[in-house]
Image (cartoon, rainbow, N blue to C red; front, side, top):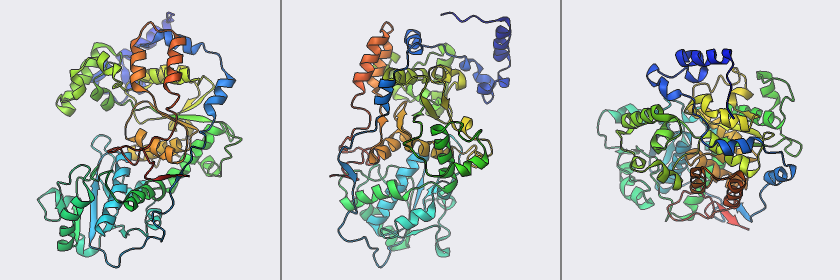
Length: 506
């Protein structure tokens, strides 16, 4: 089907090319990268045409929304027969400095509590480093309910919001300017409990304080006492709760997705009304799609996303600037990467996946993402397939979003909250948000679709495949990828695979 442009349409297109700053997807792009923003054409046009012509199937829709069966796994009770008790005396204060995004920091918090327990130390509320990509300076207390956190763990470890005056010198700046005896800088990735006892305990005993930096991924998932593993689960699934204003906004978004237009246009007053208990039985259902397709992801994958030579050159230049060209995938062809499932799904491809599974233009879709590489031009195909697609901006007023505006961690927290309360969650590619929500929804026995990346990569490489064959392969390839319990294997994350460490079979 050829797109016919009216004279006004041609003029508008020319204006977009000449004056990109007047169109929102281009508004924040520098002039030097103008060429990479050329709107990509659909790469799977025959499949897209078939998907857009599909009739609605109520029977198939009914099957899609059916909750998971009871799989027999439950969150484990307390790890011991007797209630936990604090030791009489703490060995000292433990500080940790966490980098990365929200979900990497979340895992670091859980590990910090576990290490404090191993060391019999008092944990100082973790310090969040400023994210170098998003430039977000949000602190623990900006994101998580610190009083709830301390209260839930009060019988497990001692926690303080800040150091006493005698240790007030122990700051991020203090460790940045010189080598300090109280800083533990060489903690290995996935260190054992014994490593901390042998290397950090002596520092605590000598100085009364130890600061571990960097700390992300610095505790093993294996060969730890069961009470330590269960404590990590308790932190992740019980102690870490978002601050009230994030929960309130999240509840408002969930309510609006379930009851569209029930109370009129979004507004601050509605935010208060929508935080009441939601009757899920009488409410509409919705899918949360985490579309991880930012420039970092696109560049690091070294895949071809259909933007032509300009886009390829722009991403190659970005790889050189950010990683000095040291990207493992760069040594493979696009076909090799796709056949191995190593390319993130584009908005068009994730839309075709959802359509093949049976979702259609009546499906309410919430788009959880920070910045999509290519902006609205890249998302337009997905929006054609799912015209009822919403996001934070479309569902909430600027007043409601004022407390999270420009703060990547708070924006991600809202998306996490909505994702946790959705009927179905699906992520376009693996990553920290995907891993965290897959684990949390597994813990709550909620339906979560995990795209079969290798299968999809091979299907999308086949340019002659019919819609019938594509749909059959997709459905068959995802039958056992919708939230079924997967037991954790050695070296796998307890936060992504909560069974059997956090869950017990009844």
